[in-house]
Image (tube, rainbow, N blue to C red; front, side, top):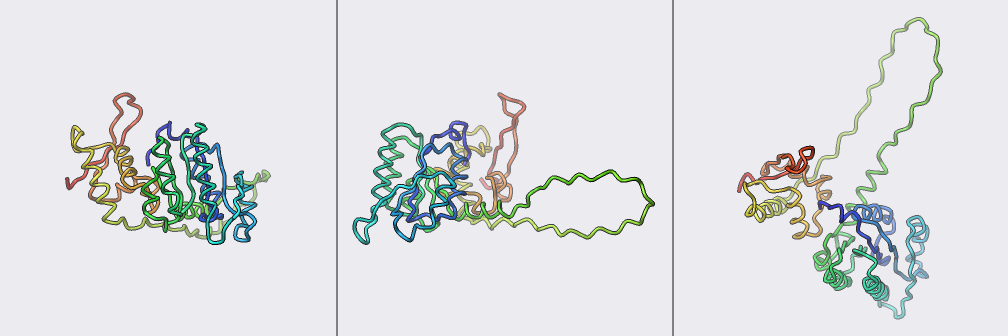
Length: 278
């Protein structure tokens, strides 16, 4: 989803349902949140006396997340949800935040997400692919844990560049026949996943919706991305092996992409897209 400068400066309240969120991805989740703004509130909810949550302590400390204790008053009933919802409404009425990040795969937070959006706040949902559709649709943007986990794995595997060690200057010696250097095997780049026809249709349909107000068949790629995000809050090009929407559409023969100079700033260029079958 294309972000404006305003979006990138959002004050965000990050509320984590520890009963329905993986602790091993917390660092990656906070890095993802940083793309959209600055978290001025970070809280994780759960019964921390439970053995199920015993492994969270160091992860919470490393990411400066406040643990909110909520005892399970009745066996089989989840009181964590109620505590998180009450806190969310308190934060809403305090007026010190521009948006919320709800980290959970639990559909019980669907009403909360809808209520926060009704108040004009930007709502980001983060959960696993098993997350029910109603919760996904209630958010402005929904990000899958699986995508975050994959990005974190790639970052951990990336080789670190070490500075070259300084060597002392030696006097010239007799020339020797240089030994052949061993061949280095380069890792093949990961192949993008196959783009489903449903995604191709989603892009084409969004272009068609915007083309009615265009002078020609070309529409702004940024506008297409924003419209797709409104239609499908869980749409993420990284799910298909592409870091950006521009890379994805260039890989699809149906679309033509071009760059045009900005009328207001000749030094910058805007990207436009056209559906060749339209």
